[in-house]
Amino acid sequence: MAETTETGLPKGFRGAEQGWPELHRIPHPPHRLPLLGDVLGVDRRRPLQDSLRLGRRLGPIFRRRAFGNEFVFLWGARLAADMADESRFAKHVGLGVANLRPVAGDGLFTAYNHEPNWQLAHDVLAPGFSREAMEGYHGMMLAVAGRLTGHWDRELAAGRAVDVPGDMTKLTLETIARTGFGHDFGSFERERPHPFVTAMVGTLTYAQRLNSVPVPLVPLLLRGASRRNAADIAHLNRTVDDLVADRRRSGGGDGDLLDRMLETAHPRTGERLSDQNVRKQVITFLVAGHETTSGALSFALHYLARHPEVAARARAEVDRVWGDTPQPGYDQVAKLRYVRRVLDESLRLWPTAPAFAREARQDTVLAGEHPMRRGAWALVLTPMLHRDPEVWGEDAERFDPDRFDAKAVRARPAHTFKPFGTGARACIGRQFALHEATLVLGLLLRRYELRPDPDYRLRVTERLTVIPEGLRLHLERRTAPARAAAPVTVPDDGSGSAARCPVHRPAD
Image (cartoon, rainbow, N blue to C red):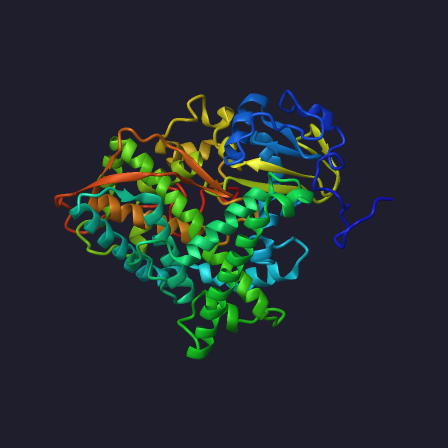
């Protein structure tokens, strides 16, 4: 009988050989080498884009072998929909996500399913993303956005193009830090990225590098990188410990996420988060709460600049819905239905958390075709799922926000749009991210015309998340348009853009 872990799952399920009885039926790249596996032509700096290229060639499910371990990838909509069945599948923490556990531990994103702190933290923190809480964050989101536009106005006056990914990172870091933890990193007053951002990028990059190096060789090949990673983790820990200590000394904030972590007991059990877990949760929110949203905004601005007809339509909606209101209210953001479609279409093409892993809760057969043993897992490649021609058409590579109008959304099968993962472990902050991003896009469209560099070609940087590389845009300040005297009330069209619904339908 196979040795098992404390969860009852067989050990050694990192590779697929044990978990997939008919693994031989799943295609793999040609020219496989003994011991090394499928390494010919591999781009170690862009493993996700490598896998997307292989997925196009090998089909909706395929496997790759590296240094003795076999991994299964899938992107077919029918397969991904079956894996969304919560009664048979659960989140799997593996590959790069598991590599983040030294910094994030049993935080919401990196906790194993059997770790009790996940459910405890989820239940304690979920009210922090209610409609009432979100309305409370809105004013701070506007204030941080004002710092961004002030910075962009200065860059425009100096005749400089703006650094889109860098500035979106500053924006989203300040937003989550202020709304969640009452902290100001002063990002827009700095010439260089805040040391917290530098340390965060270092840990994410190191976690990704670990996937391309055999475990026994890590001490030899990544000695220097391991030392830098340890220093980065120490810096993240110190930053958060200081933030928590300041809050304890001050006697509390305004009921934000940090207050909930420190003061709220579980409503049913009375349990509280330990100091160690509070640290892990704060790091999780600071990292995940800004890294993915900054990427989503950056890709959306890239596509808006490249598609002036889309930008004009979105801008006209902002003028019509917001009127001449200096600062839009919380409810007015949800009425930007077309701006939201722009964001969704950007997330379709480049979901900034570009994959999620699922494991079998029991012996099962995936989509009636592929037997899986309990504990077997696969990685769902979200950018390829979002490009499946059977769902999105033969023009799936084309940017078209109208894919997300209400009629098109209702006509699509469930579980085909997954930028925030799936199931019980989907991103708890998705409503926060969507509100923030829609608000910021509306504010920028109302204020600026976006001009791309004609020589720029989209390149994507990978550090577990994805973000455009080297994206700079030129700005023109808009002349004030003739606006409606008052904001227009837009009825709910069922598209899922309303504030109460962070995604398009319960199944997605």
